Length: 444
Ligand SMILES: Cc1cc2nc3c(=O)[nH]c(=O)nc-3n(C[C@H](O)[C@H](O)[C@H](O)COP(=O)(O)OP(=O)(O)OC[C@H]3O[C@@H](n4cnc5c(N)ncnc54)[C@H](O)[C@@H]3O)c2cc1C
Image 1 (cartoon, rainbow, N blue to C red):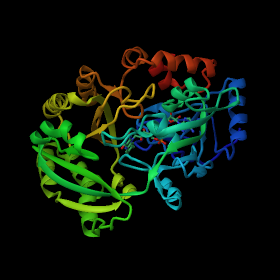
Image 2: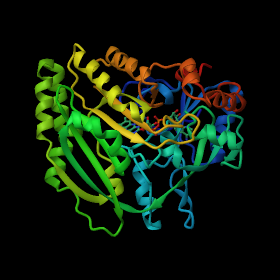
Image 3: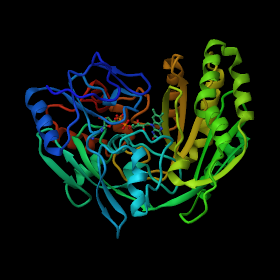
Image 4: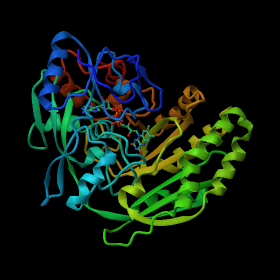
């Protein structure tokens, strides 16, 4: 069997995801350079009873991308295939990383309409797990997909869109890596634009009272809450034409504030909090106070995305938008009552409803609440307590973040779950693309 050096794979052939929360030992690895090679590998695996998974950026916290069989990377299948200037629809090779998309789109005067916190993910991974940013006027990545190309376990390729193999298209827009290997995706893009960001601390209580209303009147709103404080750090992004003058974050502010929230200084406070848990409330109050008000204008991708170097474990649930204040208050009570002090801020975002079958925002305007645990601290029963609240509020877990839900849960949570399973059963009767995690969440 062919071998390839994949990101996350060590010399002993052990693969780890970004958070090191998942460890797997694939029996072989490959980085195919063409769709034909993918067809051959997939059909070969299917015929020989070998299981196969594709890994994108390895940024899912769950074992959704883990394989004890063949592990494929599409890092050799990247870039733009075609741009339709009239419709702003762009066909990408599915292994393209989000961090490369802006550079690829720039010569065409185009951009992604919205992005999440980071850009390490592959387009295929982000689409397959319903990855999202924030903004009530915008869907997650899957909602931007207008067509896709999939190699099925029998080695045949299918072109899918609302008019060509429409059911497979709907299923594969959030396909969980369970239907086939995505080789190309067409995304609805938008003209390039700038964002003016305003970051400012404000009272948590007022933020909770006004969040739903403000989401409707703001292009992109999110907030962070440092546990054991009364402060929300709000980030409000306004969309501006591309010819608006840039006024980027000064280097000093980037170093101080970005490091405090996401990186170096934050790593120190997390380590200190893990060693001396009684200090966590004090450290969080210090962090919330130290974050300055800042306003800046830059190219959209530079405002949406920030580096995240401190390793953590994350659970995120999608709840109906209107339930946000009540759900957040209940999560807050769980966080405050938990015997160990929680150092990591919670993050709250929103998204438009979409019509994907398994999109976390399908059929309803959505608020997302994300809770994190520093990677050096145990996450298990803390996340379990918070998850109980999320499910009471009709929550749906992010497919790439930690949760304990199973097929029976998803059957009740997603009206089209049965249709998704029917597509999966039809294209992969031998379960070539399944792993233990997928069997659990799909009930297969
Ligand atoms: C630091 C950090 C920040 C994050 N920020 C956000 C955020 O802001 N918003 C958000 O929604 N999520 C966020 N996430 C979660 C992340 O976006 C998702 O888990 C996403 O799946 C990761 O993409 P990936 O390319 O790493 O996919 P992987 O984790 O490698 O794979 C995910 C799934 O996609 C499948 N897959 C990959 N490639 C293909 C292919 N070519 N064909 C078929 N299936 C394929 C895999 O088999 C697997 O099932 C974050 C995660 C981390 C670690």
